[in-house]
Length: 176
Image 1 (cartoon, rainbow, N blue to C red):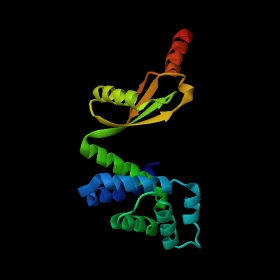
Image 2 (cartoon, one colour):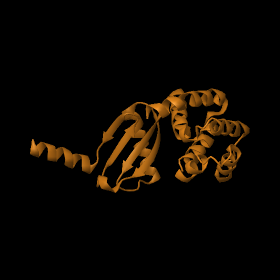
Image 3 (cartoon, rainbow, N blue to C red):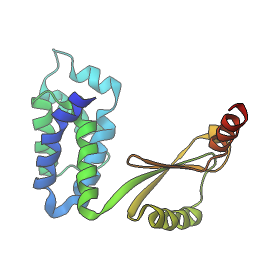
Image 4 (tube, rainbow, N blue to C red):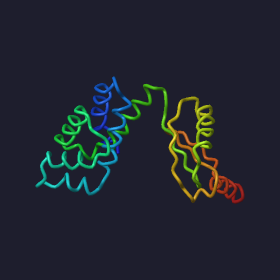
């Protein structure tokens, strides 16, 4: 969605500049707002012409699991007033990219067929940081269809050592 990314960019950049003194706490409340804004029922409620901006703001702040500082409340009011609530998840994503670029890190999503305990995840994170040559914020998502192994996505780079990928490679080799 290039259009949504284009809409979100100025908001993300302005938010990044305004919160540069404390990016970590800003990232916390931006992430909370992102998860709330992704709710389809909230989007439907916000798009109802009979609902006021204040009502949408009250619903969002009521379900937020973090205390929203004044800056966050002002940001949220601006997004709602400009009718950009649907762009809030993309704004949060672009904000995270800007924050990671400043700190020299990246988000890594590890897709695994099985749960990974914290010690194994810490070892894996060290190995992946050496492989990708940057600091990584590692998150795990379970995907039983991988059968075994892992699939790591860092930005547009993919490292796939899953059993499913190896079976696909063998299938291609045998049918070629």
